Image 1 (cartoon, rainbow, N blue to C red):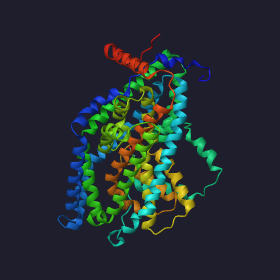
Image 2: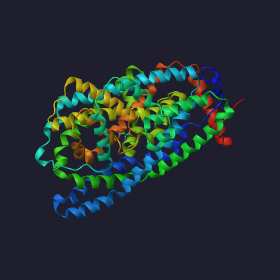
Image 3: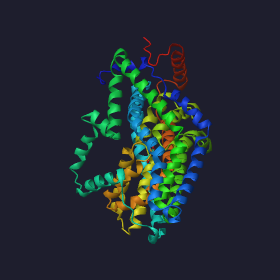
Image 4: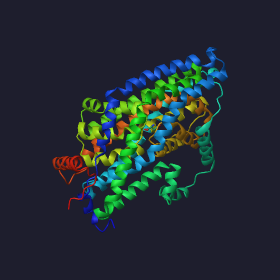
Length: 480
Ligand code: ASP
């Protein structure tokens, strides 16, 4: 079918650009959501530390009870984002593929992206390992202030799964099976179980399939997906307005559980993580300069809005419309590339997450005084790259995926309970970096992938589409 060369269909289908969905988000950025989130973070930490049983203002059971209630809006917030992310990603990737102006460009972008995603994520993970080994954050923790905390909920469940997986000895024969398992034999099952990697692969296959059928056949599904995408985004935009309240409650609860002693003990760890993120930002800026030909200072200015929104929402997926808009309007990346790269990058390209998971593993190994051999460190980088690709672009899940990374290199999982509270803050940094990595991918591909259609004609036909959309309300248009 695809080999039959019937790809001409894509010339006639004009899916609406994702950046239109960013409208609802503009009030968030105009309202300085990031500042509200920062204030909420400080207030949440303060309230939590005040209510911590150690201060003896309230008794332990009362403090725990208050913490649960304070965290309620935040837990509802997380559940909403998780609820919406599967349809959103599915629709965005399929429509992103449909935005391709020609198949050759799509193929070369796909190959280039695979190299870029894997290559930059390996660098990020290696950076995490290197600074972890050099700065040894695990040695600064006063073990006396670290109480033994029980793993609970989703983290405990995943920890058990990760442990079971790691207990099985690895053999080369597992690789072909692993590759086959990437393809979902039952896509509905992947959707139900929220297996993000399988969902992404299914979306790519479906998107390619849709491109090879006549426009009249693909139009209904494109339109349906357009509605799904728009509705999901409307929900996300509404939910986002509650981000400050959510952050406040979640941090207050985390601090009630964590306490000032543990927090102070983890200060060195937090500082090393933030330093790592700063170094990763430098790496991204150098990559954008060398491969994408962009001035680092201009790049930094350009990415500000999605960077801060990533920090505030804590979700690369929720930030997507603003990322696309920035890529197209500020960085002047070809629309077809931006719409293809951003949804894929949001789910698969997570340099910040890779750096964090590698560094956190080294930190825990130091905490438990486990020596990691060079072989294990290599395996750690490989596992982290895979795990970050599979981490869903939603808040609160990166730490859960970390459980399987830890168990794969034999580091006890109980340490997770220690950093879970602090992670509510640190995950914001890695989300901002994940979003930055996607924008750098856009500028790099925009420079390296040859275009068959000139940027000007692509932009003018995009404007034409926008006009058709505005005047006729049509989302998908068959032009001949
Ligand atoms: N929340 C992050 C993101 O959406 C993923 C993570 O937690 O590592 O990019």
